[in-house]
Amino acid sequence: MNVELDGEFAFGLAKILAVGLKLGQRLGPERIAELQAEDEVESSYRWATRWVARRLRSEQELRRFLRRKDISEAAQEGVIERLRLAGLADDRAFAQAWVENRMAFRPRGAAALRAELRGKGVSRQVIEQALSDLDEDEAVYRAAQKAAHRYQGLDWELFHKRMRGYLSRRGFHNHQIRTVIPRVWREVAGRESEDRE
Image 1: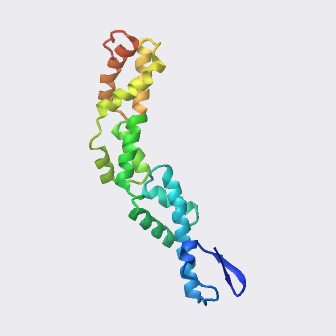
Image 2: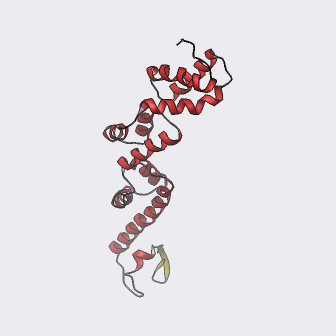
Image 3: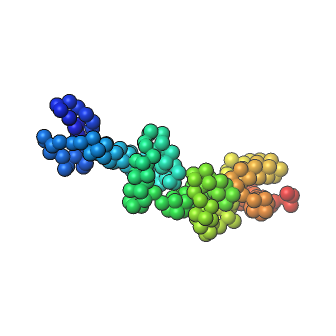
């Protein structure tokens, strides 16, 4: 809503905040400043909820988003607090959802997941909790299966080299990679693996 002071437009205000205002009401400078601060939080909260609706975000991602929108520090804190109360700013839920999504669609090793979550600003303790049930052996196998069709027609040496690189870039350890490559080679190529590293 538009708020006019002395017959001239002064500032915009979210309808929910304008409920208590009446035509002809006198507003002092302190009340105007309060209303403008409340409006900044309200409009920023609406932006943030629309952004979070696409996928969960970490608190640090939310703070970056609000900074890019040039939201004041005080308003950022108000928005983050409201998002927490609504269950929309929860690093534990975010980290768990991130790991589950990766395992379902783009399997990664614990090292890669740790790096991704650290980059999102998630604390070490929350990351370790999210990774506590991770079955890396299953993850490396699923990742290898997804990639194997690309390398299906290759000989053992090239298959091994490319698969090793692919799995290494996804954060899997060498001992996991050494175990899974012959298994996937047998399944996809329909051949017995050569006993090579």
